[in-house]
Image 1 (cartoon, rainbow, N blue to C red):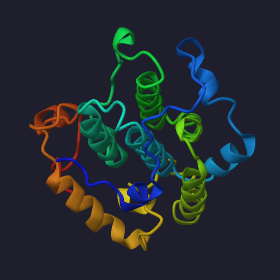
Image 2: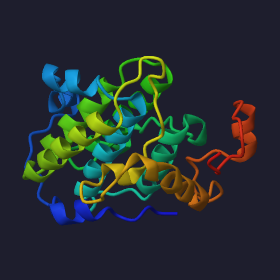
Image 3: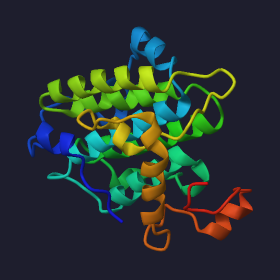
Length: 233
């Protein structure tokens, strides 16, 4: 299943065949550092699953921006699996390491960097280890590669404000509840009570046989997954 493109991304009109941003393959960290301290303080106030959902959405902005220039087909599969990882990381074969020789230059390297940062964020959620670092790095990278970052900045502020309000950090449960993709759509009138139905519908549509980044039910059980894979309890 290929996830439908969010309407807010299409409306943002961020695609541009001309790459108008500074880039150095050997110093790519400059495209997303330093991290803003005030932004980190805000993000540390909401749940880790909400942080991961924000990170996945930032990666979607990046992948969509580059689609007319460079869009390997597997990126759609990876994003789908990353959203499954927001529900439970055991759904996803999320570890990828792009081959350096195949991901060079300003049309390819930012995509590889986005993948690496997304992997890092998932791992940090699993280890309870500051996923805001990867999420904010992805946000900075997204803003950097846009010809006009204004639509992204507007989306970011609205969504961070929403996640602060709806998914505050619970010190006794730092991961928090799963966050559906629709919660990251600023034009969708999302309410937390909608989450189970939205996530359940998403899981039912997943096909692990068609997506190499999704684990089979038997693999998930070997990872001590409780319940029925691809169904919300």
